[in-house]
Image 1 (spheres, rainbow, N blue to C red):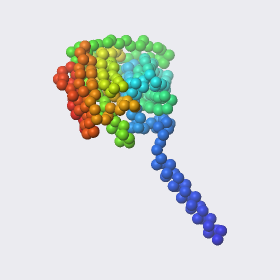
Image 2: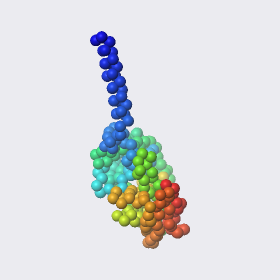
Image 3: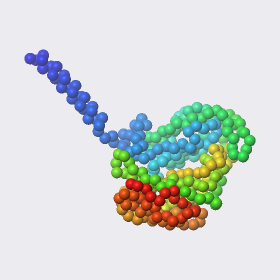
Image 4: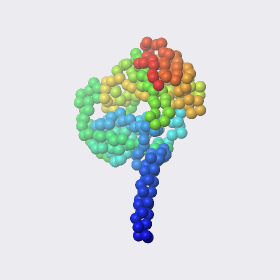
Amino acid sequence: MKNSAYPLIVLFIIASAIYGCSKTSLAPIPKTKLAINNALDTSKTHLSLVVSQPTTVLKRLDTVSILGIATSDTAATTIKWSVSPSSYRYTIQSVKGKYIAWFSKAGSYKIKALINGIDSLSTIIKVTDSTFTPPGKDSVVTPPVHKDTIPNPPTYTLIPFTGDQITLIPNLYKSALSDTSYIYFTAQTTKVYPCANSTMNLAYRLDAFNNFFIGFINVTQPNGSACVNGPGTLSKGIYFYQNTQKPYMVSGTYALAITFNGLTYNGHIIVSSTSVTFDWNYTSGIVLSTKQLNR
C-alpha cells in the first residue's frame, strides 16, 4: 500500500509544477521587468529607436533618436547612452532623446539607451569601409582616422522655411493591449533641401485645456562633408500624448494652432466616439493630407 501511494505523490508533484509554470507564463509582466536583457516590449511603452542611417560609411554623421518620450516628460527623463565597441566612434552630441556620432573604423556597433534606469532600447549601426560624395562636389576619399585622433566637429547652418509648404499627415495610435490612444502627425516638407540628414526644428505642446500647438522654427543643416544623403525632403514625427488628468480622446472640440513662416494657422480637432475630424480650411502653407480618422 505504501509503495502504490508513492507514484501517485510523484505524479501530483509533477502536475503541480506544470500547472504552476503554466500559470506563471500567463501572468502579466510588470513594465519594469521589460528592461531586462533588452526585452523591452515597445507596444506596451511606445518607445522605439530610429536610426537616420542604419548602414553608413566612415566619418558620416549618424543620428539615433528615441521616439515615444512625451515633450512634457523630457525634463524628468534621464537617458544613459552607450556604444560597443566604443573605441572607434566620436560623439558629436548626446542629449536626452538624441545621440549623434560618427565612426572611424568599419564594423558593427551596438547603440544602447537606458531610460530612467529601467527601459532598455538598443539598435545596430553597420559601418562600411567606403567613400561617399557630398552634394555638388567631386568624389571624396575619406582618409583613415586613428582611434586616438579627435576630429573637428561639424558646423551647422540654420535655414528658414522660406518658400516651403508643410504637409501634416494625421495618425491615430490605438494600443491592441489596452485602451491607450493618441493623435500624432508626420510633418513632411514640400521643398527639397541639400542635405537629407538635416533636422526640422519645431516646438509642440498640449496644454492643460487640451489646446494643440505646433510651431515650425527652422532647419538645421550640417555643413561640409557632414551634409549627406541629399538632396531630399524632410520629415518629422509630432506626438500628442494625452493629459493624465484630462484626456482628450473623449467627445469634444479642441483648438489647433500652428505657426509657420511668421503666420498663424488656426483650426480645430473634433473628437467623437467614432471618428477624429480636423476642421482645417487651408490649402497652402500648412495642409493636411486627410481631415478625418476612424476610431
